[in-house]
Length: 209
Ligand code: URA
Image 1 (cartoon, protein in one colour):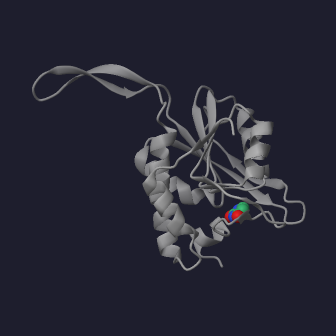
Image 2 (cartoon, rainbow, N blue to C red; image 1 turned 30 degrees about the vertical axis):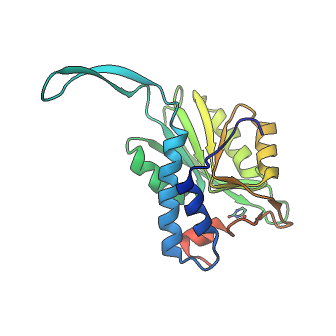
């Protein structure tokens, strides 16, 4: 799989396994998601450009490195994407945040947009789109389609879990968008759920089931 970054750090894999368990409480699911999001952000931002600046330590002058360019933009696909944002913003507190509201038509499994709000000045920014589950890929493709209309410098897609079908679909539609995930599972079922998966991420984050 081209352009897929599997984040196989032992801490990520351990926490993901705990999250898959059906008997995990909402509270623990949310906390683990936040921790995983922090760890994943560390990997996803590994190639961010830096620039040298001169600073004074208490002892002497030195040249340090700081992140270069405009602030990152995290774009969450509602509603489950919100669950990842917390951890990401802990690591990159200055990031801008956008939201895209998409629901899956349960009959056709296609993405229907009901909300779209991005920061005003998107040109030349780097965007990280977040959704815990890359299932059919329809929501991810629709989100990236819309984000490309505003001309950011780059787009990455981050999820916890992906289905092979979703990876293939997103790569076919947007081969320039790298996918970062903690696992690629076996398959989708007939309702568009990932197997073995972790169930409905939104329900598990918000305790709505
Ligand atoms: N969305 C989810 O929350 N879970 C899945 O398995 C697939 C899509």
